[in-house]
Structure formats: structure tokens, C-alpha cells
Length: 154
Image (cartoon, rainbow, N blue to C red; front, side, top):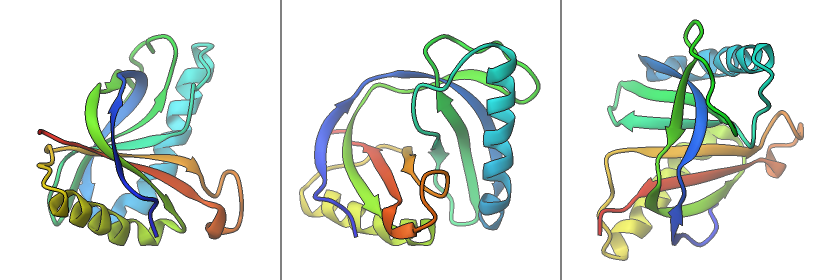
């Protein structure tokens, strides 16, 4: 399900972001429109994304997602509408790649957290997913790849 996790240093990356706090069940309905809104704002400012879209989850709750949908950029975006300048933070993270459909992400995160605990690491409060390959690149979920990153505090 996931590649063997490893501890890496993830550098800070500038981003254009939209902050959302939504019921968990709404994720599949709000994510693509938010990415489309980001792309529209970037195009209007003459900025091209510098990598895959991401979801940076700021707080964990069973019912609610408090997160930023973002696209990495090379220059800061000018705030417009819901779009704001942001960044993925520099951090020491446990990192892996999940292969498969988005419905399997919950189990992939559970597997990564089990690895973290089994290896004596303490996780930070946030996490992020980068959607390296997905429906935008292949209709076959077996080809989809999502980077999972969880800061470690030790």
C-alpha cells in the first residue's frame, strides 16, 4: 500500500493556498473547485504552479478538516478572493508514497502512523499530502501516487 517510510528534511515551499474548514464528508466536493480557483488566480497573475497540488491539514479532528488546498509557486501570489500566499513549512518529516485511489488514503495514513509509533517517533500536529499523479494524469487509480508527509518532533 505504501512505500517504506523514511525520515527526510522537507524544505519550505512557497504556495498559493485556500484555507478551508469543512465537514470531512465534503472533501471530495470542495477540493477540485478550490484547485480550479487557485489555477484561475495564478493564471491571472502570470504565475505557473511549480509542482503537484497538496492538502496541508493543520489540525486533526474526526469530523472536520481544517486545511489548506495549495499549489507550490516560485514567486509569492497576490491575495485575491479566497486565494492567499502561503507555504508548506520546512520540517523533519516521515515521508512515504501511497499508490492507489484516494479512498485508500485513510488506511495509508494509518499504516504510516503505525510505522512512526513502531519506530519510536513522535508526530507533529499537522500533515500534508501531495497529489503527484492522479485523475489529472491517468484514469487508472493503480497509477496514482500521493506523497504523505508528517512532521516528527524527535
